[in-house]
Image 1 (spheres, helix red, strand yellow):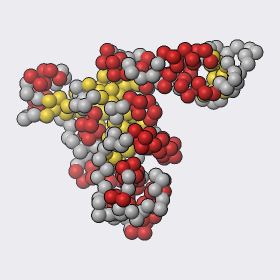
Image 2 (image 1 turned 180 degrees about the horizontal axis):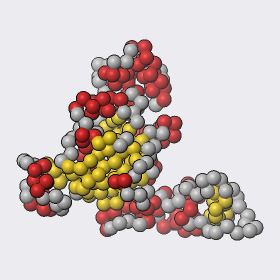
Image 3 (image 1 turned 30 degrees about the vertical axis):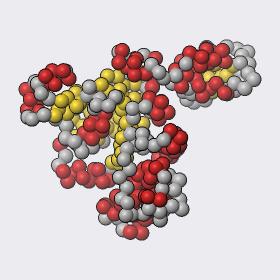
Image 4 (image 1 turned 120 degrees about the vertical axis):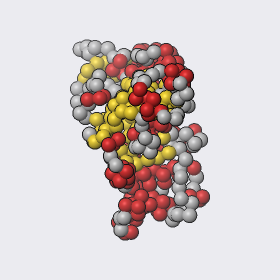
Amino acid sequence: MTDPATDPAAKLECRSVWKVFGPGADAFLARAPNLEAEALSAAGYIGALRDVTLSVAEGEIFVIMGLSGSGKSTLVRCMSRLIEPSAGEILFNGENLLAADPARMIQIRRHQMGMVFQHFALLPHMTVLANVAFPLEVQGVARAARDARALKMIELVGLAGRENYFPRELSGGQQQRVGIARSLAAEPELWFLDEPFSALDPLIRREMQDEFIRLQASLEKTIVFITHDFDEAIRLADRVAIMKDGAVVQTGTPEELVTRPADGYVAEFTKAVTRAKVVSVASIMLPLSDGASCAGDVPHATRVADAAPMFGAGDMLRVTGSDGTPVGLLRRSDVAQMMMQG
């Protein structure tokens, strides 16, 4: 795996980032670096982030997971400098954000970053159109241009016709769509989402996940997404970082985390996941053989659970690579065995 501290393709990098809370915390950290969480606590400090190093590639959906208090929300706020890190570097397009002055950070947040949080924070006295256009108004964009852009975003999230509604007239899922449209109005390069769907009921949450996948297919944003729900991470993530006590325990694809956990904590965190929802068909495919009768083709990255309905009346599928050429065979009995493992 590429060293995240030297990854030239990264849109966002964290290099040995610390955030310690307590009186004189920064000075204490400078005198006694690299302490474990227990040692920090014994000295009267809270190690909210401890030596976090990771990278987020351009166009990637990077999910951060962890139990409550693991540091995931603090990390996202440090990434945008809504919270000041105690030590380390945070690079955005190669620029160290910790060296940027307040005016530069305001400019970056207004024009290059979008944020969606669990609580929608819509302005109740403004219509949907005015809420979505608000970031552009702050930027000084002319009324006609910002309204045109806002209407486009409202249509993109499926709320066309509701632009003159007020937030109180919308459902929870619709309000969250307004929040998403508002964050997209400024066309951010980097999009932060902190448990944006966790306040929604399960059916609406699933609908919003589907909407999110559709939007990303169209927009190809670089996204940092926080969730505590591994099923949600499986559906959305290109890669996942699992945090514990302010530190990143393991980073990898959902499949890597489930099949090759770094330690007992990650194994416990992922043990309830249905493997067929995570494992790709490439992991269980057989070598190509002449004369094999196949019911159809399946891309190599398809998850086993998604491939199961593709067999029809046949017993074999042809697995294809990224360029569409055959790379292996998928047997119905192997899929059934994994599905039965739960």
